[in-house]
Length: 88
Image 1: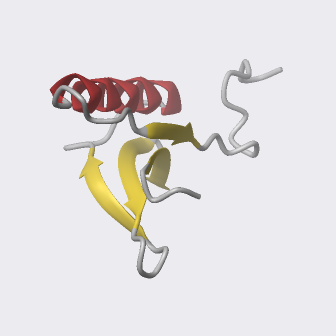
Image 2: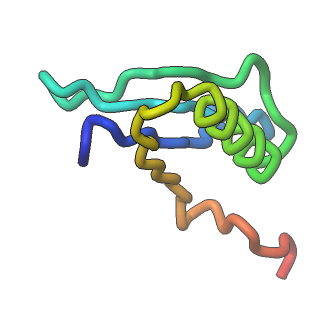
């Protein structure tokens, strides 16, 4: 993974509390470093994902002229069933 890559992760540390996290990987050790996080919990995975995407857009808009666009990756946990209709 490139060290210029920004990852958007949605975490649910407790039931019904979703947080978005923007992170990069340190070049020296490859460990994830948090860049920005949600200020508080979101009510759903989708709401947290959309808020995280908005944060990515704000970072892109704040970029200076001539700076390269960051590579963006999004992790969607297949176990989460994102986009699935509950109860079906």
